[in-house]
Image (tube, rainbow, N blue to C red):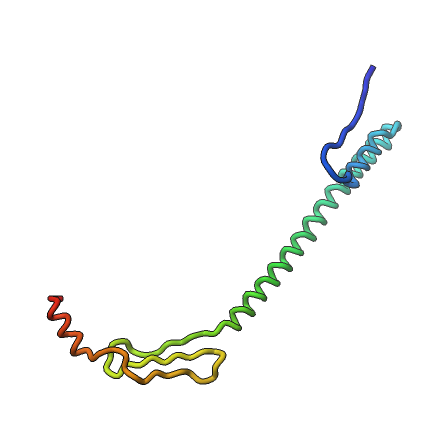
Length: 126
């Protein structure tokens, strides 16, 4: 005596192709059984390809949205440009931002003269 049974493990509902394969295996006519199993295998392959294609399109769309958001954040971020020659007499620094039309200027000398720097170097022996 031969017993045949099928058991699906896991939570949730069976996908359409598992239900269709179970139905096809229960058919008494061998032609209907084999034809429907082959047709179900073809539809299953086609369905997986369409599902992967749609998922990849969704990923591409989400990637495009993230890139646009990053570019928008970069445009809003202020760009600071510093100009000036470090160590020269009367050295000053000029800062400018994208959000402010005029740049800020600091004309006062922050560094000492280069002549005192040479004296310090001579004292240290460099």
